[in-house]
Image (cartoon, rainbow, N blue to C red):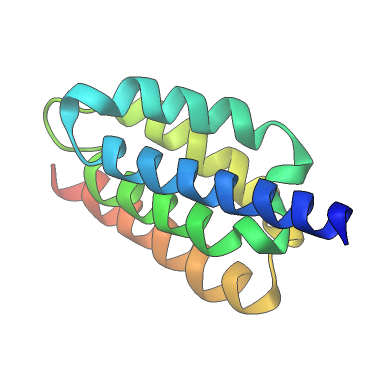
Length: 114
């Protein structure tokens, strides 16, 4: 029982951190550090485990929406989305198809129009 509680706590803490990162990604002041932290985190295949999936997709959605805007970092956003797209086989089928596709489409659209 203690191991389960420890794992549940780890999952909650990680999802809480991803929510903080998501908020930081929304502002030009926080984007660089948050995107770099997320890029480093996504270098580990454990980042793509199912308990973190929705929080990670939420972060990637923000990145795809803002990275091409003035004051953000398009290259960093692209690298982050590329790393996650390369690991899309680790996402659940629903997220791999719909979540990642929305992120990539949003990013491509933003890139074309900015």
